[in-house]
Length: 253
Image (cartoon, rainbow, N blue to C red; front, side, top):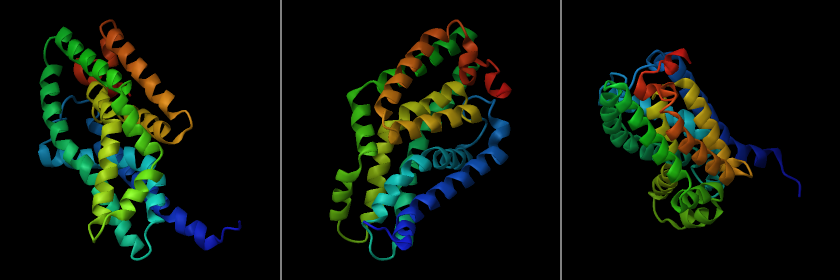
């Protein structure tokens, strides 16, 4: 079957726009927030500033892996495609913005743990690594990842949504599954340092691999095993969790 240039453009445009948005978010994070990467907890930010930084981080890390789903969803839209895709994307990001509220509360608590005696911060880091690793191996992780990896079934569901709220509901629904799939990876930032750029790059690559490469499920399980191993290793090498132990690794990175 011959595919016209117009059809290729129709399919590629939504994915391309999300990748451009992700690149802009990465540029903003690197140029505006990189100086805070060595600071624990909320990095000294109040809630509004924290949510702004958090939202940009989520856009940078999550949108590349979401681009293929957005392109697929765009094919179900016949009119007003561009503004409706904007609504879909904003609804998706809104889920992560709301997730920033408990993330802020957690960061406040973990920031206090970072100034406790070294063994206390190390113990908290071990809990974070272990909790993240264990979740990576659970059926719930597998279920959420399956929805992100094979979205054709949910596309039929999205197409059945009636009324003008369809794009809002579809974006939020997909965002909820992405949150269920990836919150354990985001939790690792508490240990590595919330604005640790190297950690962000590695975790963004992991998220993309989990969702897009053929062996994505094995990647998820491998990360789970590594996280559990880090929960043990951090007692011998506290610098593995600079965001909680003050190991200085984030600043060095």
